[in-house]
Image (cartoon, rainbow, N blue to C red; front, side, top):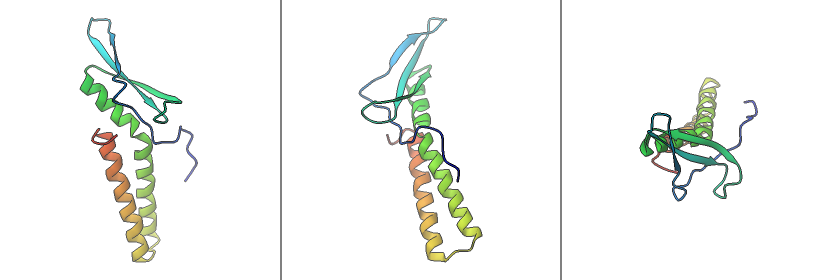
Length: 115
């Protein structure tokens, strides 16, 4: 696998921040939240907008889960490669179970179920 060039995860957004609202050109509001590289908010990764607070939170959850989704795909490819190489079934099961766990966790974060 090649080395990534994006800011390493996990990325965080915090509910205590609460986001902010901006008036759009038509008088409606755009809700905005921020994604950080750490809970201490050292480096801003992204500002995420949405038409409603729920839409904004869903967008934020999806974008903040990008590093985990990337890692889950890498793990699934490793499991697939291990299957192709026909490695020992015990080792294959470990790789597969780890890939499955990472994929489930990344999807949970993307759906906003876990931070």
